[in-house]
Structure formats: structure tokens, C-alpha cells
Amino acid sequence: MIQDKRFHDIRKVLIAVLVLNWLVSFMKVIYGIMTGCASMRADGLHSFSDGASNIIGLIGIWVASQPVDKDHPYGHKKYETFSAVGIAILLILLCVQILHGAFSRISNPVVPEVTAISFIIMAVTMAVNLFVIWYEVKKSKELTSDILYSDAMHTRSDVLVSFSVIATLVGMKMGWYFLDTSVAVIIAALIGYAAFKILKESSYVLCDTAPIMSDSIKRIVMQVDGVKACHQIRTRGRSDDIYIDLHILVKPNMHVGTAHDITETIENKIKEKMPGVADVVVHVEPQGHD
Image (tube, rainbow, N blue to C red; front, side):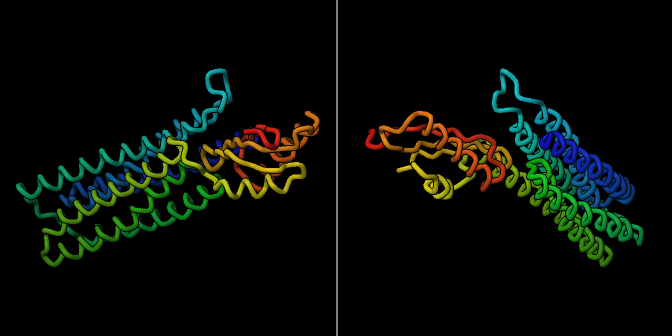
């Protein structure tokens, strides 16, 4: 039930952000096309990709929320991480598209039209972006969500992009038209960097990088009465879905029932002190065993 509520809350956040992102996107893209401003159009496409990433996120959350089955004994939560990779790929494609358009304008220059409405649109959309960033960052921490974290990083770059576009509009108003193409290239670089960070974070989960330091687990295990030593600690999974297996040494003549009670105590203590741990497997060995 807790996980069902978590997925429901993530879906609500993504839908709300989707509406705001596409509102911002249509304003900037349409006006960018009308005035011939490449940097504003590129910024609008960036915002549009935010909305597209929200849709990818909604699909990923739906799959990730499916219960454990025969083919997926560990559940479907990694599909949320796969969706984050999908967002990164979308960003890379967008980056290529913006660079292509920017370099095309070098051989076919266009003098964009800059008006007071240009500044008003950028100011309004930037205010929306600031709210979306605050909301997504807050919720990504509360719900420990890869999707919201990836989307928050994606959206965070919008503020820098919007500042750049405003600076470009000021420059073009002064006759520095080359800034339009230059800033479009900078925007593409920011998008590419956001994609790199998402792929880097996602790879930690998909490649089973240890999410918890072994020493932290060992300290908890060694506090349990009857445990003589602890070794071969392995961890994997997402920060909200961690799987641990470890070996402990006990007295060779210990009753199997007592050893079982120790393993249950270890599992309960680890889950109590380390939120996000889904399962702990304890292998019991007699002390002195090679």
C-alpha cells in the first residue's frame, strides 16, 4: 500500500509538471517561430522535451508499479530507472536537433525581431520554471524517485537557459545578432550535460553499484548478540529498493533455531536503521569454517 501511494503521488507530480511545461513550451516556440529568434525557439524545444520526458516518466511509473510476478521476483522498480535513461536519450536527440538548426543559421543568417513581448514571455516562463524546479526537487527527495530526480535536473537547466535567452534578447536589441546562434549552441551544451548526468546516475542502479557502504552494515550486524564475525557483504538496487546479502560466523555448536533468530534480528535491525532496504539475506557459517 505504501508503494502504491508513492507511485500515485509521483504520477500526480508528473501530470502537474507536464501541464506547466507544455504551457511554457508553446509560448516560447510559437513566439520564437513568429519572430525568427533561434535561441527562444531552442529554449521552447527544451521546455517541450520536459513535457515529453514527463510522458516517458508516466509510462515508466505505470510499469514500475506492477506487482512482483514469476518473471520479476524482485519487482519492476528498475523500469523507473530505465525511464530516466529514456529521458536522457530524448535530451541527446534534442541537443543534436538544436545544434543542427544553429549551424544552419550560420550559412543562412536570419535577423530576429525583438520586442517587449519577447521579454514578457521569457519573464513569465522563467517564473513558471522556478516553481516547477522547486516543486520537483522537493518531491523527488520526499518520494526518492529516479524519474522526478531526472526530470528535476532536466528542468533545472531551464532557468540557466532562460537567463541566457534574456541576455541574448538584450544583445540583439543592441544589434549583436550573432548572439542568437551562439546561445542556441550553449543551450544545446547544457542539455547534453543534463543527459550525461542522468545517464551517470542511472548507471549506478543498472550496473548494481553498491548503494550502501559495507562498513555501515557491518557495524549494525556486529552489535547483534551471537555474531562472531561478518563478511562478504553485498548490496545492490535503487536507494528506495535495496537488496543486501551477507555472511555471519557463529559458534559451531549453536542450535539452528537460535541461528535463525539471529538472522531475523539482523534483518530487522538493518531495515530499521536503513530506510529503503527491501530485503536482507543472511548466510550462517560456523566459526572457524574456511
